[in-house]
Image (cartoon, rainbow, N blue to C red; front, top):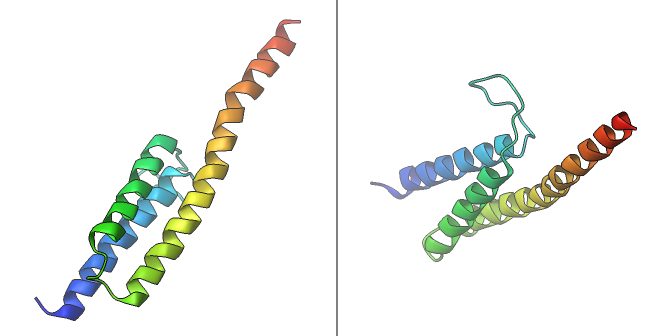
Length: 103
């Protein structure tokens, strides 16, 4: 396979995983359901897969590809932290609401 085709296939795979992670973080709609869905654990696993791909391909991908992966990973990790904190607070807010309703 020629180098250009390999680069396109690799970036297509990475783009697919990045898009999946954004959907799992609830930042974009799932095109299959046309709904915003959140799966924090799934997002964590998908981000870990992207990091693993970057590590396993080290030295075999261009500087441009590395830069794109680094930027995607950084953005996903920051959004993961914010989404995780929000998800961790939600049950707390729900508990407070039901406690207040019971008073």
